[in-house]
Amino acid sequence: MRFKLGFLGFVVSLICIHCSSENSNNAQVSENYWIKPEAGTSVNLGDPLALQLKLAVNNADSIIYYADSTRLLIKKDTSEAVIETKNLSLGNRLITARIYRKGKLEEINTNIILKSSLIPKKFSYQILKTFDHDTSSYTQGLEFDNGYFYESDGGNSPETGYSSLRRVQPATGKVVQKVDFAKTFFAEGLTVVDDKIVLLTWQAKIGVVFDKNSFKELSEFPYQNSPEGWGLCSDNKRLYKSDGTNLIYFLNRDSYQEEGYIEVYDQKGPVDSLNELEFIDGMIYANVYLTNRIVIINPKNGQVTGEIDMSDLLPAIYNYPGTDVLNGIAWDAKGKRLFVTGKRWAKLFEIQLKSKN
Image 1: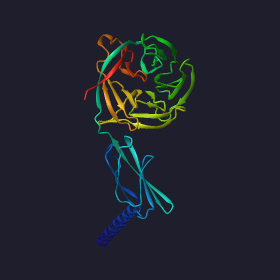
Image 2 (image 1 turned 120 degrees about the vertical axis):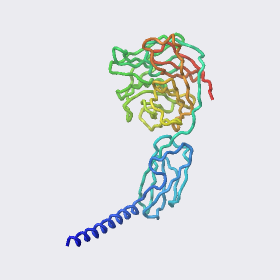
Image 3 (image 1 turned 45 degrees about the horizontal axis):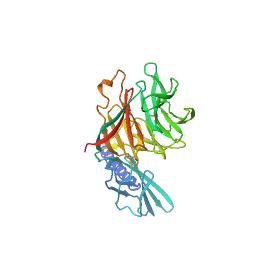
Image 4 (image 1 turned 180 degrees about the vertical axis):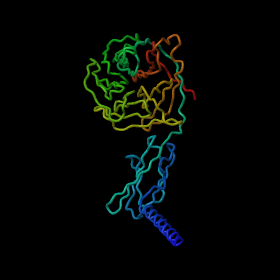
């Protein structure tokens, strides 16, 4: 009896294994799935990308492929298709197949990591002019407009000082207009849009809009996704906002609401700690926080196309107690002049870029 029970258990086990295997196979054939690309596949910007599905039922009326919201192509079968990636943005891209069959829609997703293989062009600099700069200013944002610098000075403690917004005369470094902020207000990046100054706060999750001439506060707007504000610039069509990561957000120039973002990559991977921003001749220039590096970013896809080595910009004789890191980029679009400075620096510099390769 013991033998018979053991044999019976063995037979039942085989039946269960068979049933389990059959159910698994049935589940597999009853589902649509991606053959290519596998989730998380790394692809270099500009390289071809193969797309292929396995459908449970091969009578689709049409299959439309998307990268995020961008339509890539339309097919009527599941044969392999190859698309170009040169017009996509860098970073994590959601790849979607929408399968239409007899008026019904099925949708399946995968993802790729689109990276940059471009080696950025290297630049050094030449100092053309040196200007005085207020050493009390912990420079967060810097902008040149109609003959003046507009500068945001960050701080929210007795030890570091409190934040302010300043209009500065370039020739003398003199602060000719200033508004001081409450202790809870930590000023970050700014940009000038028409007759307004748009200013970020660090962790208060709001931006503030001022009248450019009177410095009177006009309105506030909330951040939508990023918890912090770091840098800000404008191309007069939209605003670009950094938050200390490798993301740059697009803001509507009128409502200041987010309308998308790019992920910034160089050939080594994501470029984090993006800080003060400036829009110059179609590209975004960004300080990389705690470094002497400025990166030049293509706003269409997030690719770093150039980098500037700003080492040894501030002479040692001006490295006073409290002098901090490089931060602050301003562009005179009419005069084609580029300015840079740093936090509590005694000097501000007009520079000219020099190619190193």
